[in-house]
Length: 344
Length: 156
Image (cartoon, rainbow over the protein chains, first blue to last red):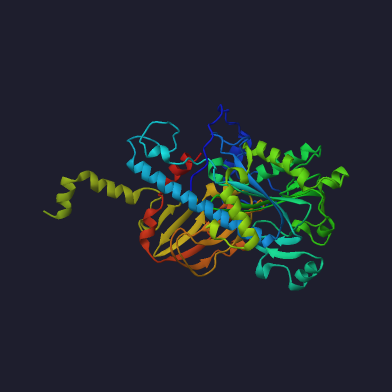
């Protein structure tokens, strides 16, 4: 399958190199000199004690444009299956590129380095595709009403059958997932974004990727004049009590799936039926509730979300139907019929 | 003339090097049998008597952030590259993969109650599981400590 044309990179921007030096050195020193028996990180708060500060921007060179596709009324299980097919596809294509690179490296001229963008070197080397995230994409989804639970609450550790039945009687499905996090609700009026990204070219760690997702949501809320924050609990909040967006990610060999859920004008009653994300005493809110404007729906929010996400991740968005019509058709076919063949 | 006397005359430096190796601090006889290797997925693997102990490196735990849940591997046969559990941090569940093929014979149960140990002691007491190797050859493809350090530096 031909790869999309790789856009020429724009003028390079300086990479942010400042770190919080004092915190970094202190924690690293503590790690090495303190005997493990008295080292006790029983941190209830999510502090950045275990590593360096996240980069303020994604390292150069700029990655390729990011295709997105909007899928409405999508049952959760089908979207999970779709995501796994897309992740497997990315892993397969990455392996092929690594193989091509190894071949080119063996056949190419002496002393060339595989990722150099120079036009010279052996003819074979110039055909080797770069690692610029050209197979990434983002699914923007509105689900049918579904309660979902994270990986650690599956099977024996999960909710009781009685509880699952109670939730189903409310008019929602209950599905267990392989993402991180606890129980939450997805449904109409909620923008769910599933970035299927290769983290390797971004050089973002898992921790920093989640932080970037939070920043994208904060940027989106800011477009509506809503001031959102992060707290010690993962996700995006209005204050310590009210949560506006939830996050739950699955990472397989640096390829991400699942993602985030931002309440636009979701029916928040569904959240009152559970202890959302396992956090007692907290509330769930939405953009329309914060703005007292029920017309703020998913369609209104999507353009702002693309802007916020694009700015945070330093990528341009394009419609999947424009850049990869074949892939878009394969996805639509899978959603309608459950037939995965075109995605394999 | 005895062989050792002859060799010490012909190869004086080799004998002194051999002596130095035994006497050097931090090196014990057991090291010749237990080798620690690394994978590009930031796992470490220490093999002793056909059993591999597996964990994630300090680099990995830093990249993940505060670990809140460790999903243990199932006790069964695995092929190199199969998923053997996962590690969860900041609402992200990251799959762990078997660096070699064999049978998972033991999982580290402390991590069930103290997942945070994986942040503080990733390369010793917070090992993830033990796998009985089906083939010793697979270890040869993995990184040595020096290669792994170089790999980490190159990817940043």
